[in-house]
Structures are given as structure tokens and as C-alpha cells.
Length: 372
Image (cartoon, rainbow, N blue to C red):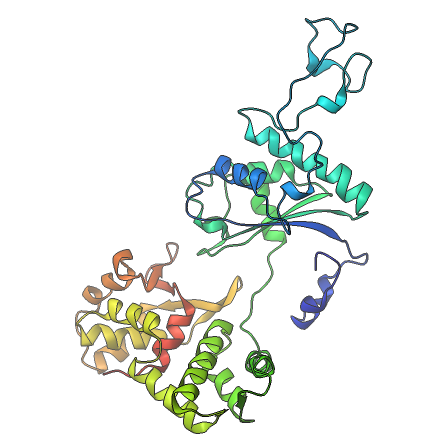
């Protein structure tokens, strides 16, 4: 999309949002990690990342990256304030201007952005702007000030894409009211993957096997149905089918192979990571296990920010739990929301008794797994 290819937007039935004049961008991509403490750490990483394909540093003109000193000639008084002298004026060698400002990573970042827009976006590449993509943004420990910084740097030629996981938008970026307004304007509904698209994941895998392994015609649809619109879960099930076929020394994934995988899934043998999360949440309580399954299977109101997650209401499952002889429900719930046991659920603060599944894939796994 940064290059003007809006195929994905059209497939998502959001074609009405495509601008009349498509804009093209130079892109910078950075994936954050939990070692980044705050905004200064993030800017330091961005200014020093040397990835040849998508770093910011690759776009900054070589001249001026290093720390250099300003040089004066005799025409400029030694006491002159360089900040008020026009760059390029007689007596100042503007080529010696250092884009790196010692002890000021914010100004260094601004200088880098200005240089990239001037020399790369406008002059060299003839594009409309610079797009800085910050992935895994939620893992940054202290985001104070980042909202204001992004707001101050955002122009018609500089845009930011902030990506991450959070209960809502304020979990990702806050501290500046106008930033929140901009985010609100840019919210797009994220829907589960369609059945046809889920099938294509499996069909694509078959193509990559180049005839060494094939899927019977009905199998991609069955796997897509089990995946319930979650591409990661579709991939997991497909991969497990391949492992099972290899174990049986089959070159075709048919109903027998898929049936074995489904049986392993229902009994908790197929996916160790999901099963571990499930067992940690349930503990030794049969009542908690039943309650967790009732919550996973509850019909939910879909959130506009993520149709995949939705919210569940404890009250809606109380009667079913009582009918199944599950007692002391309020004493069973804390383990499901405690961090040391997952958590599996997260409270929705603004609505009492309302929760969200932290991992929607685990929710789908719970719905497919048998109660022992």
C-alpha cells in the first residue's frame, strides 16, 4: 500500500477509503522489543539501526551522519551564535554541519527525518512522503511522551504506523489528546479471515511442496473451518497434518490424516504450547475447566476494533454453569485473570463482569478441545 498497491484494501471491502490520488511512500520498518525502556531508547534504536533493507539510517545522506564540529572562517566572529547564522553564508562550511547532535537523540532523530524527506523523498525518489512503521509497539515499557513526539513530527510528508496488541487504542499510544483524535480517524475494522482466504493458506503450502505432498480436495476447506478465521491457527493445523502424514509415511493428506490430527487436538496432544496454557489456567479444578469452556463458547458482541476477539459476560454463563453443578464461580474466576497463570482472560474495566480472551486462538482451541 505504501507504493500505491491497494489490492488488500479492496479485498477487505474498504475500497471507498482509497484516496483519489494514491500516495507513495518511502518506508522505514522497526520491530520493538522489551529491552526498549522508553521513547529515548526507541529513537536511539531507530537512529542506529543499520539494516540495509528497511532502516532509517540507510536513507540518511552519508554526509553529516558522523559527529563533526562546526568550522568557522575568519569572516565570522568567534563569538557569533551559530544558531542565528544562516547556513551556507560566507564564513560557514555548511557541509560540516553534523546531523548527529550529542546528548540529544530527539533532535538527532528530527534532523535525520528532515534530511531523508529533503534528499530522498523529494529529490531522489520523487515520492509523496516517509512512512515509519513501528511494530510490536506494545512491548515498550514506558511510552510517556511518544504520543506528543509522533504528533509533532507528523506532517503531510511524514507519517507513522503504530502496530501492536492492546485491549484498546489507549494501551498503545496516549498522552496527547490530538493524537487520540488522529487515531480515531484512522481506525479500521479488523475482521476474521474469510473461509476462502483460509483455504488459500493450505493451497499455498501445497504449491510450495512442489508435488512432494498433496491435500485431498476437501481438506483445505475442513482445515479452514477448524481455524475459524484465525490464520495462525489454520497454519498450526496444516503443519500438524504434514507432521502426521510424515509419521504415517503418506504423501497425501486425506480424511484419515486430518482425523488423527483432530483427535489429538481434542485430547490435548496436538499443540503443546496451547495445551500448556490451557492446563495452567484450569489447574486441578474440573469446575474451572467447565466454566472456561462455557465462556469460550459464549456468543459475543463484536468489538469494532477487532471482530476476532469480542467480549464475554460472566453473568451470561452463570446459569449454564449452575446447571452443570459448577459451584462457587466467583472463586474459580481469579485464576483465569491472574498473570502468573496466563492470564487467559482480561477484565474490561469500564464494564463490570465483562472480560476478553487475551489470546483468541487459545479461545478457539478451548472450543475444540474435549472436557476430560
